[in-house]
Every structure is written in C-alpha cells, then in structure tokens.
Length: 187
Image (cartoon, rainbow, N blue to C red; front, side, top):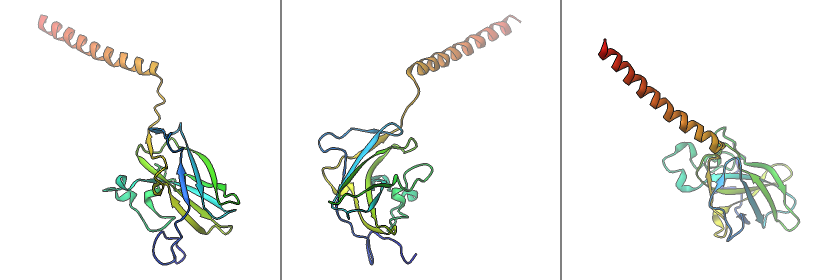
C-alpha cells in the first residue's frame, strides 16, 4: 500500500546498526533444523523498541527460484520467507532494545527450515508497529554464516533394522523366484 515499508527508494526505512550471528571466531559449521539455536545480537538500534528477526536466503540461494524473489518491501520480501508453511518472521517481538540500542536473543531454528544458506535480518518497530530501522547480518563481516541441515531423528538402531529387512526382502524375492523356476522346470 501507500505506507509500505521499503528497503530502498522514497520513504525507505533506514538501514543502520549492526547485526551479529554467533560469536566471531567460533562459528558452527552447520545449524540443524529443529535442534539448533541461532544467537543473534544487535547494536545501534533505537532504544526501547521491539525487534522482529527474519531468516533470509543468501543472494546465491534465490537465483532461478522465483518463489524466493527479493521484493523491495520489508513485509513482502520472499527472500525472507524461508519455511514450508511460509513463516514470514522467525521471531516476532523477539526482544526490546536496551537503553544503549543493543539487544540479543537466542532463536530456535524451526524443524521445517530448508537446508540452505541464510542471513539474519533484524527489524526495529516503534510502539505503533511502524518499521524504524533494519539491518542484515550479511553486512557484518564478523557475523557467522548460517548453513542449515535437516534434523535426522531416526535412531541408528532403526536404520540397522531397516537395512536388514531391505536385504532380507531381496533375498526372499530371489529365493522364491529361484524356487518357482525350479518347480516350473520339473513340471
């Protein structure tokens, strides 16, 4: 609409502040969907405002994927709609910014987040819910990259049982075929 919050152009919501994912120098190789938490901290945001946190695909992961297209609108940017059920905000009203304009929150990675590469966007909102500022972790070289993998909750014992029965069923198939061919040859 006329009051759309945009990243660039006339009436754009300012991009400023800093967003940090994890701790520089000790970044995890991968985050596991449904089992990992992403530590997000930010600074130089307006004091006393609440922030929303979005998980956004990296630019490389939206190429030739129109359903992940970048849209110049803070609320309609498909690059930041990352889950199967189209969860648009990873953490809404995550935390209130301290008097010095900083804050931090640990956000659980939902189980249905696709294995891919992401950045974190933090959006600040005033008391009326209007966007006042935003920043992306990709603009901070010290921020950890977010690479996700799927949570495999199948126990190894079940994998073993499954493998055994797969092999067993093939052996039964070959055995019964051989037996049937032998019976037909006799008849």
